[in-house]
Image 1 (tube, rainbow, N blue to C red):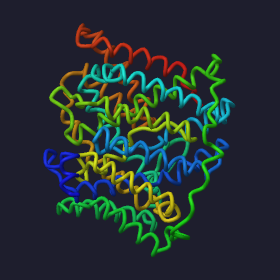
Image 2 (cartoon, helix red, strand yellow):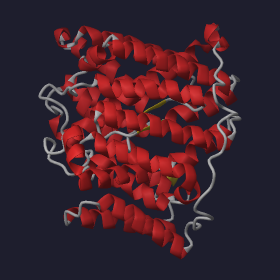
Image 3 (cartoon, rainbow, N blue to C red):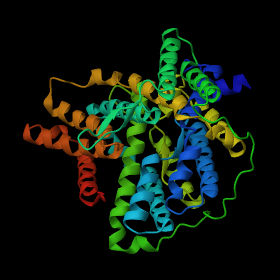
Amino acid sequence: MTRWLDQFFELAHHQTTVRREVIAGLTTFFTMAYIVAVNPAILKTAGMPPGASLTATILTAIFGTLLMGFYAKRPFAIGPYMGENAFIAFTVVHVLGYTWQSALGAVFLAGILFILMTLFRLRQWMVEAIPATLRYSYAVGIGLFLTFIGLNQTGIVTIGSPGAPVRPGHLTSLSVLLSVFGFLLMTVLTIRRFPAAILSGVLATAVLSFVTGVAPAPAGWVSRPPSLQPVFFQFDLHSLFTWGFFPVVLTIFVMAFVDTMGTLIGVSARAGFLDKNGNLPQIERPMMADALATTFAAVIGTTTSGAYIESATGVEAGGRTGLTAVTTALCFVGTLFFAPFISAIPPQAYGPALIFVGLLMLTPITRIPFDDLTELVPAFGVIVLMAFTYNVGIGMTAGFILYPFCKLVSGRLREVRPALWGLTALSLLFFVFYPYT
């Protein structure tokens, strides 16, 4: 069995082992397992049955991540995006007044478009037009974004007063101290080159959280998966033919496009997958896995899905092949029956992992040319807007606009590839029609 795994996933070529890949898969799983609880909770506010949403969330993660592992052979996990589900629940349904069925119709359309664009290599063509500087800025921006999520989840940083958007949390509270312990434990284990540093930190902090009463211990271990029937094949395409729904479709399309692209390139930059030109070889394979997962998600009743930022935790744990993704997918199979236990893992346990990975993802910033403002300004826009708007899509689209602008005013327009203008146009439309609230 080990020999077959080595040959199929080319473990020796990637200088990794079955043990390391399994640990990496477990690490990715534990840092993104929160979606089992969080995604249904968000979609519940849109009127979607939480039990059915939970099952749809898990099945989408299993389907997409297995595709990523066996077809694309990359260590990236797939699941429903947190940003897109919040956009659908709070903006599309509550602010704009559309039904969740109509929103799923837009997700289904985006998935079909992604499949067609991937088949005709249009997505790859557009991705390869993105300058190397922007690619490296994605890794840094996503790292800071992850850090901010982790700081907020753990309570180290909280929402501030009108005069200060954020402020320190109760830094001497037991919950925050446990989070700090988790971060320091991961740091020590990593310095000591312990291969399962991040995973060990998550599990140890979770156990301490249960023992000290900071987080409630699991109420149970096993439960039957809730029925999928209330959300299965419930997407509605009628609203797609109305002009008022166009901003919704455009926003879902652009957010999904840039989120996946940014995650693939950003995490790949950290993992060393990019070639000398900053491109990800055979990028059409993970993109096809992403496109099929998004279409599948709409059919079974959940929101836009794609490569997950938390995959960076598995990469940092040593994951380099599709075996990491397959391990993560198999763990999600278990959540169908062990959802009570997985859902009990508190932010104090997985939050420090996000902060630690954010730290490690800052490395590519050294490849950004700080002596060239036409490169630095777009990269700066990507990094700060990703982190400070709490929206990866806004940071990336800002970069698509700033890069050609800086090259234009400097008289170096030849450095802008033709396909980048398509992304610039989409980005401008994104900002014009984005439903600001």
